Amino acid sequence: PEEAIDAYRQALAKGADAEVIQYALASLGAEPAPVTAPKKFVSELFDQCADRFEELLVGKLKYRAPDLLFDLVGRFVPFGNLDILDLGCGTGLVGARFRSFARTLTGVDLSSNMLRTARRRQIYDNLICSELVEFLQKQTKCFDLAVAADVLIYIGDLSSVFHGVRGALRDGGVFGFSVEASEEQEFVLRDTCRYAHSVAYLRKLT
Image 1 (cartoon, rainbow, N blue to C red):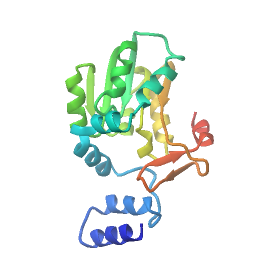
Image 2: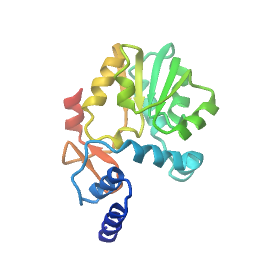
Image 3: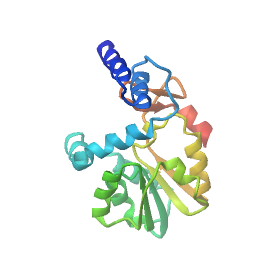
């Protein structure tokens, strides 16, 4: 970590993107943590790995979040005929699981390359390249279900997300999501450059 901090500070001195570098330094405890990851950090991270994203996650890491989320949300929503919002849709792994529940399926992601892969699945009615809070602020009671798998790990302060989802959902709507668990603070930026959230914090938001 000490060598990484030194390297980041050298990069910063040589003109590298200050917001991204300071975020990386914050993840190592060398700068105060921001309340969310920089948009450039997220978009570039996923643009770079879009072509091998599913190979890495499903093939090597045995990624199961879409299946777990589908099984959980299925207990609370009726089957079929739902207008569904897939926040941080990526390549469409979550959308593929939820398509059978959907009347319409809308995907939102910050990475244009991930959306290009999702488009090939031909399961989405709408795909939008946008930061999710900015998108949510423009929606009013448009959806019955919002899902977000491994998306909130790039946002520390989730109050704007929950407020936006609440406004985008119709009465009786459901929000299903995954987070990394923190046993200490409400949210904390880890050295993985991802945030973790406490159960108490999430309950306070709902």
